[in-house]
Image 1 (cartoon, rainbow, N blue to C red):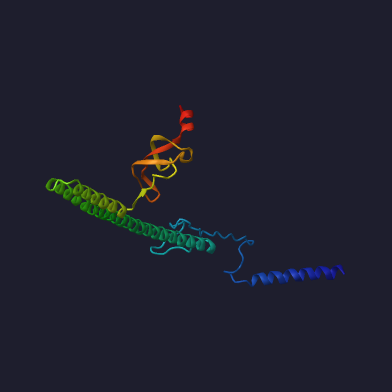
Image 2: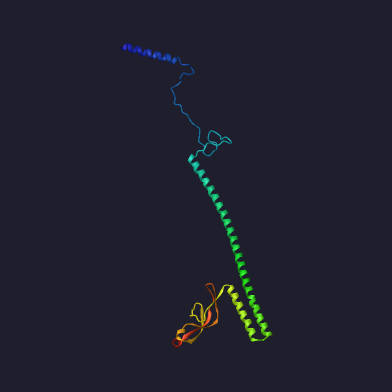
Length: 235
């Protein structure tokens, strides 16, 4: 058994040497297999300049390294900024137009108010002119005829014309004589002793008061009656 085993080993070695001698000279291994090292000299160029081992080509840009969702967010941001700028520009335009229209309306209202005041003033003055005419006629009549009756008629006509002019302007006379004394519209300038039932009544009017709507132009200057007991208590 040992003999056959030895013979088999020799035969295997002989066959191995024969196989090695059959290799072509250029393919015959010169030395034990070496580990092959591969050096990858490619570099990622984030700045766009030529990297190590190569140059950047003119007119050629590298692929975008940003994620897609970042590009979408940037695009949306730019669109939102542009929309905000458009809205602001429109707002400024509308505000300028509104200011211009407001100024024009204010000027029109001012002109209308001035024209109305001037027209009302002219109407009031025109209504007083007949009063002036009546006064002149009364003076001429008194100087020509010299009678008291003609003068009184002229004065009465003048007073009537003046009251009409005041009424056309919106002024109303305040009734005072025979009315209870009201300090809101009456001004007491004198008192007189009266019966107890006429206590606090206006006995005489010295000058007529007037009011324009709810506005008091001037109070009526009046005399107020006071009973004997009230007058003595006041003393």
